[in-house]
Length: 361
Ligand SMILES: Cc1cc2nc3c(=O)[nH]c(=O)nc-3n(C[C@H](O)[C@H](O)[C@H](O)COP(=O)(O)OP(=O)(O)OC[C@H]3O[C@@H](n4cnc5c(N)ncnc54)[C@H](O)[C@@H]3O)c2cc1C
Image (cartoon, rainbow, N blue to C red; front, side, top):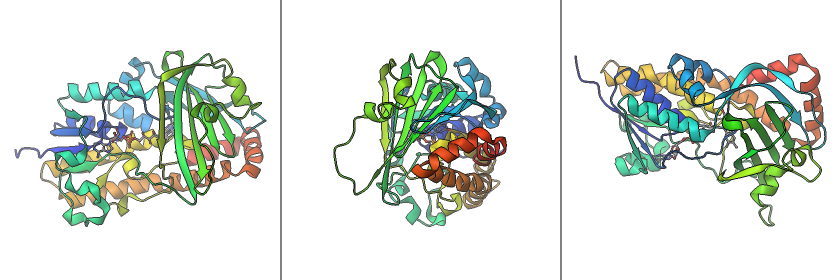
């Protein structure tokens, strides 16, 4: 039997690590190069919702997450600036685990399976020449064997707004549901119970690109307006200062995998608005969709370009509809005049609540 050709994955986030694990399960030689180190906190709501949970089960990773302390979320409640809804049952339960723990557990598994992980190494330093301007290279000129899992593509502004995210963990936060979403004209903050008795406090905010003035401090942004239900929730919270992290330059405009010249997984394809809590699921799902074509290429049964096309087609089939729904949902939620009616509709109409939930995952 011909020796399997090695796959190199650039980026050791959820998509890269999941793909690395799945390829090792097929005995494909894999190296992941990751710019950062582990364990580390990430800006993320840490709420895994959608089909990615089945991916985790199929890859034999679900139990590992349970052992790592993942907890299930069953209820959600929504709060515009002043009102609140009564908690609703989530149509399907979500899984909640800090990224600090989740990414480290995936790293451990990848290494146990014989994968090689290079940390503190950027793709360009290990021969990924195309990474500087990948999409300008035609598919046939892309170097074979290299998968891009480098996460979101930074974009300074989008439609006149700059998007940024903040995250911190806290204790002593009384919640009426496993997930609370607090929306305001500037964005939204999710409060979600996670492992270890902590609550994830994570927000997505926008600032008009032409807006001057001083940047607000992260505490004020995450705590919400004085008098708001969010401010009350966090009034006596004990924050874990080591867990603070921030990310800027987010691009939330949906992209198609087929428009990428490289093989991409996870946010490197496109980012789904975080309000859906589905980005991690897309990272797991896209990694799973990439396994068979990459294994085929590695064993000499498929060309690199055929593998690229198959992965892109399957990802677009899986994600295009939910990305379109998520874009609209995010737009509606961030329209101040629609926030109250939308929350009222989600509270009163079981049909609307289920439809919005299911179409975005
Ligand atoms: C505010 C906010 C809240 C969110 N909340 C949720 C949520 O509740 N639920 C949910 O499902 N999703 C959520 N998401 C989305 C989720 O975090 C992402 O979809 C997910 O992390 C994507 O995984 P990934 O592996 O594609 O990218 P990442 O996890 O970002 O990993 C990419 C990795 O690549 C590395 N890298 C980048 N460039 C290079 C290079 N040149 N060489 C080597 N390494 C490199 C980076 O260091 C990083 O470790 C949220 C996102 C934001 C911004």
